[in-house]
Length: 191
Image 1 (cartoon, helix red, strand yellow):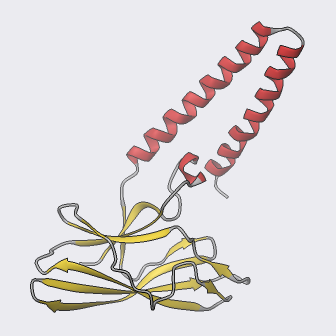
Image 2 (tube, helix red, strand yellow; image 1 turned 90 degrees about the vertical axis):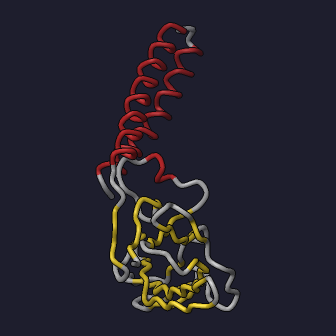
């Protein structure tokens, strides 16, 4: 757990104490004291939010090579192999992902994990549906790995290609200062 994780939990815990203090002050008829407490806490929240936004905007995109692993606890994902299959004006990119468990307990990947490819001009290509491959949230035994494949259909003239592995939906990591695992601010350089 990082310092920024602890800072977030401190701010969340402080919120409960502030709310309790405000309710206590209101019950005792001290409205002025309640408003002062609330104002001080809102100033702290505003400072934290400003730092969070500034850090998020200032962090550069992290670029990894194709074989580097991205970790989320004991679970990890990496590109194991890339196959290019040309046909007509398009080209199929088949990416094999190695999902691994470096821990001592069975783990599952995130059920909200998505992957997509970005071209040099920022065009996004989502994977084609592949019902025969295991999902990213497959159960993995300790010290083992599972391989899953995703196929992407792209034009043949793509020069620079990057892979993004991220989670969709609500994530508590949005409120923690700094880089979080699989936050979408890391790309894997494929070519």
